[in-house]
Length: 361
Image 1 (tube, rainbow, N blue to C red):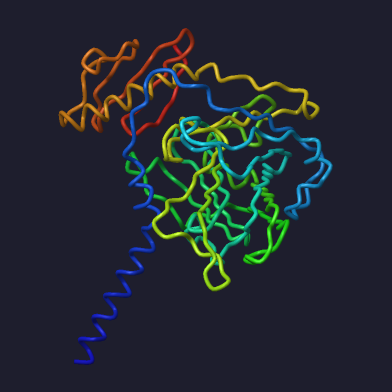
Image 2: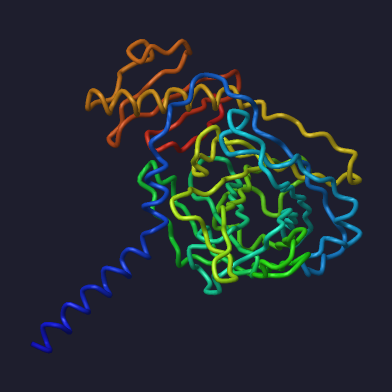
């Protein structure tokens, strides 16, 4: 009898561990059901990050001279964009870089600062958090995600490809040399007062990015990388003198560059970081001249996904998908490849969303 009870307890513990381990995958898989992209999209936001000569000492305060000279980004908006109300708390960020790595600073206005998670690689978005998504070469594959809460507890993970394309997060992956700091302008976990904000400083070494891309590292003046930021915010109430999340209410997702749908794992909608060696505030962001081609390829990609769900096969051409673009298709062993030719390059997208280009011969 004792052995049987012990066996039951073991099964329960294992089931609970399985649930916790796969919470982020289940959570994000639910978000994958979303409308398809239609034609040309608004150009994602862009930010010019300036080069600094001296390393920045991280304390979370963003009061170094280098940070003072760097421009603030546009305020964050709802993840779905203008179709949803403006966030009730302001969020904004800055970026700088040097020979050693990328600096990220953020300010999150918050009248009630709280956090509970203290274990590295916990599911940080269960607290209010700040998140970074980075794809240096902009191919939608092999990108990084970093989350941290007001206690400076971090979760870093690597995505070989988006969840919607069968990607599975590699939670054991660590950002080499990552440094982070948080400053609290108020008090932590104290409902008796009103706080002002919390701010974040991150240093992401180039050594921790080389495995993500074949692009030049360190980057060169004028190079552009794909990046986005998200802030998860939960509604809370005070129970027995403590902040408690309101049951049954989903989180808010406030982002720098709007995704259009509730899914951060659509890298094609992330913003652009443009590296500059100019004097802070003097360089202008240059829109991506391949943005229109990328949009049309993604339109074809989503149209194929929808067509396959209905017909259990991929369409052979744009006409069958009722597309108005000049996109062409090639059937492959794994599915399809859609492509468009420009004067200089052949641009393509695979059935698992990888975007790439080749010089025209």
